[in-house]
Amino acid sequence: MIGLHGKRILLGVTGSIAAYKAAEWVRELVKEEAVVTVAMTEAAERFVAPLTFAALSGQAVHRDMFDAAPDRVMAHINLSREADVILVAPATAQTLARLAHGMADNLLATVVLAARIPVVICPAMNSFMLNHPATQDNIRRLESFGYHIVQPGSGELACGEIGDGRLADWDAARETLLSLFQPDDLRGKTILITAGPTREALDPARFLSNRSSGRMGFALARTARRRGAEVVLVAGPVHLPDPPGMEVIRVTTAEEMRQTVAGRARAADIVVKSAAVADFRPSAYAAHKIKKTQQDLRLELVRNPDILAELGANRSPGQILVGFAAESRDHAGEGQRKLRGKNVDLMIVNDILGARTGFDVETNQVSLIDCRGTTTLPLLSKEETADRIWDAVVRLRDGRSGDGE
Ligand code: CTP
Picture: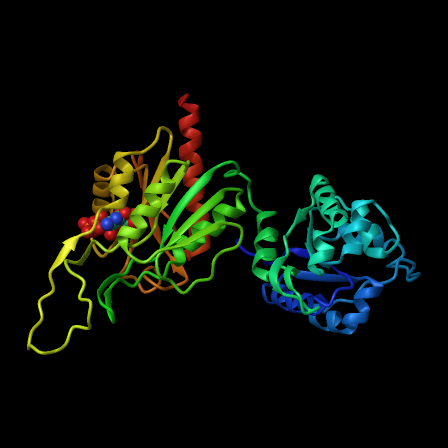
C-alpha cells in the first residue's frame, strides 16, 4: 500500500512561527489516515495552542516531561515505542542544538534521545541563524546520527528577510516520510525519466500535441527517488509541480527532449521513456498566425526523431532501457515489436481506450513485456504501478549481475 495510511507519526512541534504550518501538516496526515500524536515544546505553545493540535489530530497533546498521570509517567520512552517515525517540524535552532548534543531537558528531546525509530527533522528559522556555522554544524551532526534532514526552502521569511530558512513544503516532508517505508534498492543509481507530451508549434497560437498528462512519468520519478535513486526528470508541458529531491528539466518539443536526453543519457544507469513524444511536427513554422483565407487547409508534417530508438542504438554497457507503448489494439504484439525494434529491456504497454487506464486518470493497468514474456498487472494507482515497474527493473538488474555482467 502506497502512502502514509495507517502509519503512526509522532510529530514534535517546536517554537517557531512556522508552527502554524505544522497544524496544516497534521490535517494532511489525518486526511491520509495516518495516526498522529503531537508533542509540543513550551515555546511552541506560545505560537499555537495545544488545543489546535488536539482537535486536528484527535489525540491528546503531550507537553510535560513531568506529567504524573499514570499513563504518561513513562511518556519519554513509550511515545516513540508507539510510533513508526518521529517528525520534528518546525525544528528551531535551539531544538537542533539540543538534539545534536543529546540534551534531554524537555519531553521532545528525551523522546528523540530514547527513540529507536527513524527521526525526520525539518528546520525552520531566520536565514542568518540557519547559515551560522553553529547551526550548520548541528545539522551535520544530526545527519551523522542517521537522522533525516528535510532542508528548508527559500523565499520570504516571517522576519521580512528573503533567504533560506522557510519550513520545507509538505510535499518534501511527505516524500521523506514515504521513503522510510520503501526498500532502498535503487540507491546509487542515476535514473533518467521522461514524462508528458511534447508540443510541436504550427504558428504563434497553435500546436500539435497529445493527451498525456505526465502522471505516470512523475509517479515513476517520485517512487524511484523514494527508493534511493538520483533522478533526472525531463518533462514536456504538463500541469504537475516539480517533485521534490530531484532535477527537473522542462522542455517543449520532441527535438528539445531529444537534445536534453542525449546530454544526460550516458551518465544514467537506467533510462525510462514514459513521455508521449509527438511522432510528427509541422514541416514549417508560420511566424504569423495562420488565417482562414481558404476553405481547406492541408498541414504538411515531417517525422520527429525516435528518441528511444536512438537510445537503444547507442546504449552504454549495462544500461537498462525501459520504453512505454500506449496502444488501442494488439497490445502484446505492439509491445513485442517495439521491445525488439527499439532494442529496449522492458516495454510497458497500456490501453489508451480503457476508462481507467488511459490518459489523464489516476489509475493504470499495464503489461510488462521483456525477452522472457509478459506480466499483466492489475488495475492500480499510477504510483503503485510505478513501484511494480521498479520491482521489475530491479529483478532485471539483479538477473544481470547474477549473469556476471
Ligand atoms: N518514443 C520516442 N520518440 C518518438 C516516439 C516515441 O522516444 N519520436 C518512445 C516513447 O517515449 C515510448 C516508445 O517510444 O517509450 C513508444 O512510443 P509510441 O508512441 O507508443 O510508439 P511509436 O514508436 O511512436 O510507434 P507507433 O507510432 O507505431 O505506435
